[in-house]
Amino acid sequence: MRDALFSGLKVVEFASVLAGPAVGMFFAELGAEVVKIENKTTGGDITRSWKLPCEDPASPISAYFCCVNWGKQHLFLDLRDPADRATALQHVDAADVVIANFKPSSAQRLGLDAATLQARNPRLIYAQISGWADPEDERPAFDVVLQAEAGFLYMTGEPDRPPVKMPVALIDLLAAHQLKEAILVALWQRERTGQGCEVSVSLWESAVASLANQATNWLMAGHAPQRMGAQHPNIAPYGDLYTCADGQQLLLAVGTERQFECLCRGLSAQHLLENPIFQTNAARVRHRRELNEALQAIFSQKNLSNWLETLRACGVPCAQIRDIPAVFAQPEAQALLLEESTPDGHPTLRVRTAVFRMRPR
Image 1 (cartoon, rainbow, N blue to C red):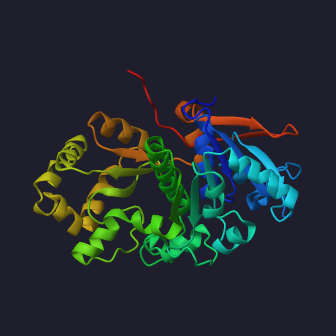
Image 2 (cartoon, rainbow, N blue to C red):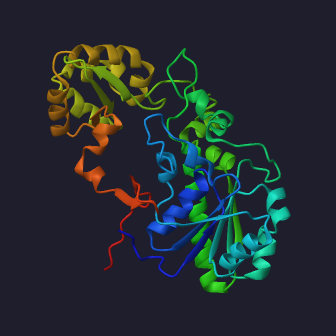
C-alpha cells in the first residue's frame, strides 16, 4: 500500500544500480510519482540482468533490481536521440526532483546537468550521487570498491583472516540515506524561497562519515581498528558468540555495568562479578579472552532456547543467529513486504525501505 505523504510530488530518476534508485523508491513508497528513465540501448538499468542462477530466466527483471524499483513508471529512452531526449525533458520540466548518477562529462554532453535543467525549471531540486569526493573523478565506484577504500573491508572479518565484504551494499545505502536527507532539506528550503537547488553526495564521503566510533577511536585515541569478527573494540561482552549444548550459537550485547550484573545473576555466576578483572567494562575489554572462556564453560551446559529464555527474563541483551529465511518467517518481517507485478504479469516481492511511522496528534 502506498502512503500519501508526497502525493503530488514528481520525481524523475535517471539513476541506476542501487543508491539512486533507493532514493527514488523511498519517494514512491510515500506517494510521489516516480518516473525512472532507463537507457534503452543497453537494456535499461544494468541490475535488471543481475540474476541468481535459481531465478526464472524468462523474467524481465532480477530480484536485485526489484529491491529498489517498486512503484515507479519505467520509460526506456535513448537520451542521445532528439525525440527521446525531448520526452525526458517534458518530464523534467514538470518535476520537483531529479535524481541522477551521471558522470559530469556525460551530464553536460546530454544537456542533463543541474545548471541546464534548472534554467528550464527553477523550482527543480537536482540530486546527484557520485562515487568520489571530487565529482570530476569518474572512476567506477561499485560498493565493494568503496568498502575497501573507506576502511570497512579492512575492519570486517575474523582476526588473522583475509578481509570480508559486507554482504549488503551498505555504502550505497548510506549514500542513499544522505541524499534523501539532502532532498528533504531542499524541499523544506523551497517552501520558504520558492527556488530549487542542487544537492549532491558521494559514496566515499558517505562511507567515511559513517565510520562513527571506529573513526574517533583512531582520531582521539590512536587506536587503528582491526578485524574482530562480531566483537566490539570498546565493550565486552558485546558481539561475542558462545556455543550452547545443542551446537547453536548465542550472541551477547552487554553494554552497561547493570546488564553485566544481570548476566552474572542470570547465569548463577556470582564469581564472575567478584573477579577483579571483570568488575568494569574497561577491565573486561582488557581480559576478553578470560571472560569468554568462563562464559563459554557456562553456556555449553544448556541449549540455546533455555539460555534465551533465562537471559531475556533477566533483561540481558542477547540474540540467536537467524538466517534470512528465519528472518522472513517472522510476522513482523512479513508486514514489511511490498508486492508488484511486471507489465507482463511476473510477480515481484521486496522489503519496504521507508519503515518509519508518523502518527497525527
